[in-house]
Length: 241
Image (cartoon, rainbow, N blue to C red; front, top):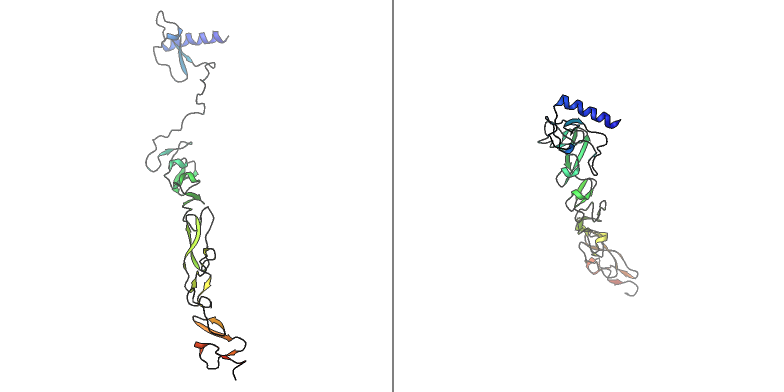
């Protein structure tokens, strides 16, 4: 029944479309007087609908027609997206390094500064949609979200490791340990009075510092009988008559 219907369609198409088969040619060599249109094929000299048994070859693209925009996309909207609208971009790779495709809707998408992953940061890391150099960023030092802090000092990030640089006024990094920043209060630290290493050494006294050394009290058995702070508590009251 299928073969009979196909032959009838061929005969009808031959009369209507003016198809012919050159003498001596087989079915595979048949031609048509007029080109066959979409969805038609030339068989036995006739333009007939492509039969259902003409399966698509293996690997053929069955996903549907490619996107197309009319007029052609140019200028600030050079990309034709899946909904056939001209937009600034359709995916991150449509944008330059250091920017990503922000899709607002099917009709609006554009490249904006930032990122969605490391691949579009040119060797940097993508931290909260921003490309950063984690080897030198104090807010993302060594990894995203690792924030450097320094006590009484300016924090630094060098080769992905936190540290500190300049101390706040009146403070010093006297123990040379970057982990605790500038730990010494140079205004009041008797061991580092006004500067690192400037230790107070008033004889026989409890040493103190207030932007300079002074005796807070005399040690037991001594007194400052001459009221001269330069020699501290000079008198041994336990033995001096």
